[in-house]
Picture (spheres, helix red, strand yellow):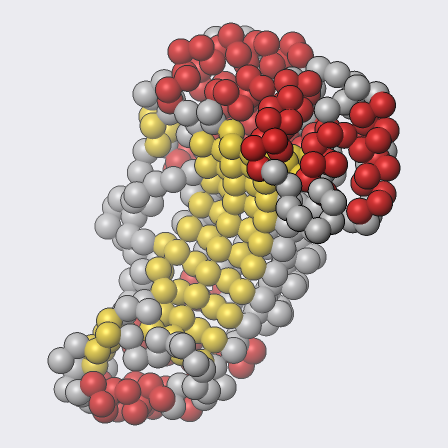
Length: 397
């Protein structure tokens, strides 16, 4: 890999003339990023030639030792002003057969922060973390704006990715997606070698032990998917959070950590492999102290062990409700066995508590004993009307 000393001297401004001057310095040093920057900035009147820009970016990748990393197929990344701008990782099965040699070459040629177990470098379950580390530890990744990591060998690579992220400041990283895919909560994961991962084994300990939050001061949007990922999310400026599963190591769903600026929270949690839904008592974690800036709460993909009326009643009693501007739920189903009296009356009794908060129903609506028109009148009392909302969902006859 060529010396990237010029990377640390990159302009700390977005002004075009500063970057053109920087491009001249790079070109004078034989660095193809200079040409890439000039092509990208163009003449100020027209956009860059995409074919020419793609070709010079391939030259940049060869120059920086990243060509093989792209060819592996696990990483997809874009460039801006000579630095990697957005990056997405999904372990590519098609290139697995030659990955051991690739990892050895990358670790010999490129900087690295995360450790691969020296006792067993031939373990294919270690290679995912090494590929992630190869890109995140590269100086060209210091100006990342968006990062999306979906992990396969997460029992190793989650911590390795965190170590790589935290090793260097990421002053421009605004969006981060981190975790692993699953169908049913707590189901065993399958590694790249076909072995099983029991996610419940990480309850309490957590998959990630390294604190990454100080390294990403510009982070505003965070998506987490999986069980028991982090001990906590502590970030002063995070505004938007989406979680799928109990992402905190102690199993918490709503009490994720200290996020004083968090304005929008979306929670997706389904029935787990044991047939258990999320306890409605978890809603007690929503407090003004833990979520002082929360304004938008999306529960449209959250399944609780209580019915719609019980969930709405719990939220009506929640101390966080007065500060909410909008609430989104999935299906709204209220039957006679859910309440004492008429379902429509029980729903109407809650409306004054939500008068300030726009209620959105993304799924179907069934209020037993009430027709669609009557239900619509009741729901109209739940908060101010807003254009384009789906307050009445799909009423059932």
